[in-house]
Length: 273
Ligand SMILES: C[S@@+](CC[C@H](N)C(=O)[O-])C[C@H]1O[C@@H](n2cnc3c(N)ncnc32)[C@H](O)[C@@H]1O
Image 1: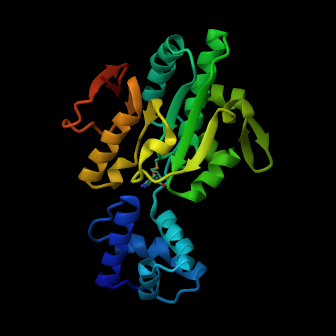
Image 2: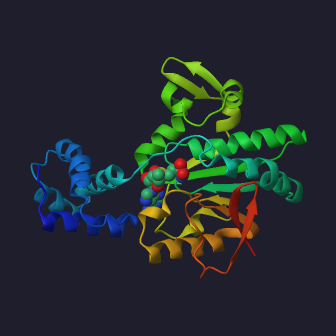
């Protein structure tokens, strides 16, 4: 189904305002392919009807708005993505934190998609705790704007294909059990991870404070002022000395002087001064 320039612009405006995602020009094909199933699901016959729903204040249109945001997010993820960052987490950041902190260590995976990122963090935590031989409390929260991906993250069951992406033999053998439809992560790994729907445009105070934040492969979808604002607020949500990991292709804007860049073993993270 074709989409007019006016309807395309209305959908772009809705997405930017509600999720921070900036589609830019000439992504009509993407909108058409991702929103056609939404039209079908909500029995809508055209894009003007969909746009009318998005602009409506009626409570019954809430589900439509959630479905549109869900459909327009890109949820690509895999285990130990940017693996050198997990090497640094395993060999340096977590051992240092667990040695230094008396209470719980708190880690936030800020756009966690289907869970591979927070569970990879939890597998690293498990190894460090085992090595220390002491019981230590590491709490990991995975948040995402898309409720659909969080349902899958909570299930912690991954297909053969999903498990093959980035997971080395050690982790598969130690922390996964085969089930009918793939592999289930063991509760030793899932227990320390909680999932919560959360839009990065909203205030972070409800989430508490963190020792480490992973904010990877999400800021690329936002215009620069939104990206800078999110990172500035993340600085406030970090404990002094806390670390933030961005994806390897992203850099901290220079205006954010709250952070110093730390390079280690081929990876880079940012420490709150
Ligand atoms: C490409 S995935 C990145 C997953 C993981 N961090 C990684 O690097 O593999 C981007 C995720 O950001 C989420 N997202 C997009 N806009 C968001 C927002 N405003 N608030 C929270 N999450 C958002 C999407 O739903 C999607 O699951």
